[in-house]
Image 1: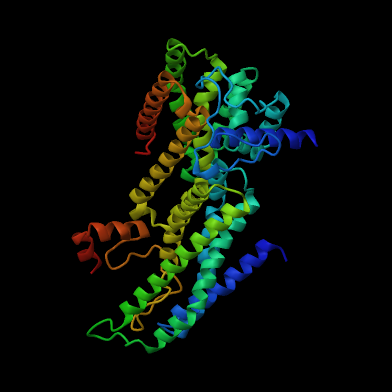
Image 2: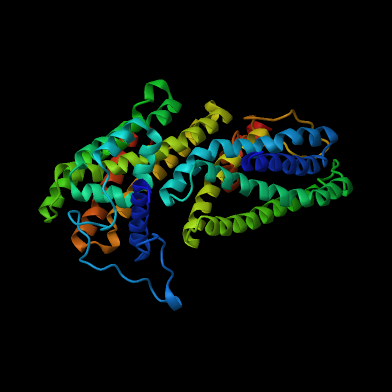
Amino acid sequence: MDPNRRDETRALAAEREAEFGWADPNTGAAQPCQGGAAPMPAAGPPYRVGADPAPVAEPFSRAELLEAMRRPARLIDLILAERARWMRTVSQGQNAALLAALMGLAGLLFALPYGLVLGLDRAWHIAALFLGSVAICWPSLHIFGSYLGLRVETGQSLALGLLVGAVASIFSLGFAPILWFLGATMDPRISAMTLGTISALLLGVALLVGLAQLRRCLKLRRADPSLGWLMVIWQGLVLFITYRMGCYLGFG
Amino acid sequence: MGSLARQALRLIVTSALYGFCIGSVHSLTFALRNLLKFPLLILGTAAVCSLACYLTSRAITRALDFRAVLGAVLGLFAQTSTLLASLGPVMLFLAQTIQDPDETGLGDYPLFLATHVIFVASCGSLALIRCTRGLSHRFALPAGRARLLMASWMALCLLVGSQFSWYLRPFCGVRTVQAPFFLGAEPDFRGATSFFEAIGDLVDPPPGRIEAAR
């Protein structure tokens, strides 16, 4: 079997295992429940940031991360579609700093089109909105995480925090053509408030998806209570700060 | 011809056919305009939403690449259009036989409009259910995930499609009122200049704006 194909299959198996409870180790196919019974629970202790979320998933190699830096489509896949491998890379910590840099790059790059739709002078506003808010909240994630006994290195917590900004920026990229279209078909003198409301709504959705992606990566349902509460409170803080940042930048 | 091109062609033909039928309630001019406007509405909506649909699908599952997403979205629209086209003769018959509006009232036009809305909603729902099942089987997606995917695509397409249809209006109308090819951001009788304002006006009618429009 081609090594790349094998890696892909193993990652898929890990993802399915994480999502459905268990997977066929050879094919990666999720196993159906027998007689309506619940899926087999995954063995092992509750998840912690320092532990392996899915034992079969391969972490991203340095070469893969550098390759993603050159190919935006690969970067989107790496962030959105390969959660098990993403989380494994963060857990292992070896390339976590590079991954964090990649998240920051994605947050900057993919936020540009939406900003350009708003206007040339506002091109940087979306990156400031998402990455700025996460940057403001990141120290609290790192310090509180350490305080609660989660052995997290700077690169790891930075990658976790920046994931929210990166995913939100990616979704803002998807919403950019929609906002442009709505702006082009509305009368700007009369519909400015409506368009502003829709824009705020789209950005809100993008942020919520970013927060949801972080939640999915951490598998909060299997986490110990302290990590669960920390993430819930931290996500609330990110929401609040992003709202304030949005008001400051004129999105409110 | 590729499957995407085939689906796009099917979509253009069937939506143009249905557009022609509902446009005929006003005049042949409106019917002929709809041959262009209806496919433009659907293809334009699909084009504007495609990137957002793709990114949404990547967040939910990695079973679909961009081509598969585009195929699924076009397939959904093509199925809806095909179902609608099959009801085209019904709408054509109604368009030719309804009691015309006059100075005293709108005649049977509200009935025609209600039938159109019911047909669109029914065909759209049926196609949505079928496409969700098809997506689930074809890409081995869990049913819940396929439903989530379709629901998010539908929300995106509604957001864009509703405003695009507002911009391209009128598709049909009472015979006594003439209108250009499309009205764009022209205010309606309540003064709303976009679909979202019109919905807002329905929920909370603005008396001042209605007076100004008069």
